[in-house]
Length: 238
Image (cartoon, rainbow, N blue to C red; front, side):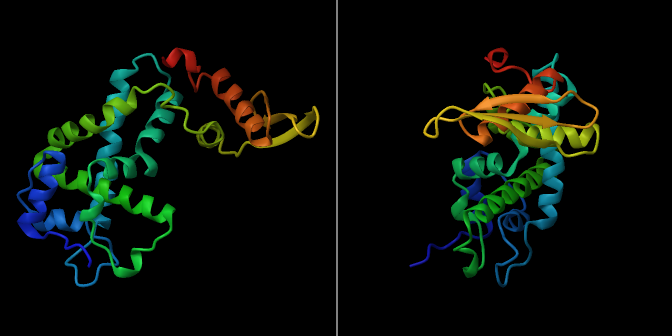
């Protein structure tokens, strides 16, 4: 038997118990927790998601600016991207136990894992928008800092994926995409070592070694990020 989703004030109370924030407009909160596939719903989270995304970005950027006073703009951007991506938002949604409160159509129950992550991330952004609308920027800031602060200072928080980070940085500074090539393969078949090179027009190429092509490419990307002062070495993040 399907579990009944609470409505109205009951829904507001259920969310308050999970996140410690009260809501004076249960209908707006209901929209934040409703996917467009839900039949008969008065509204969904899409417009709220748009607003919440901007509020989250502002507060996280502010938090990083204060926490890392000596970090260059490139590193701050990488940290920001890691803290506002879909995986982080979906993880916080799950940690707060909000998954069971999301209203979707029956065909959404079997969504692929990637789409489930995106939906939970969208819900979190919409929830932040409701908090902002009902409690102002200070209220939204308190909520975000409570659930993002520890993540923002975690060792390696800026380095979710070196290749992705390098691509984002390259697009920002020169509008081009890094190009990778495998320069060499050494060692026996059961234990190979690859050397990869990455080239970005206008910048010195980077090289890296690894036991797989992907590992070597990640190492090459990391070399460029550190050399260009975009990425702090891991030992300096401890």
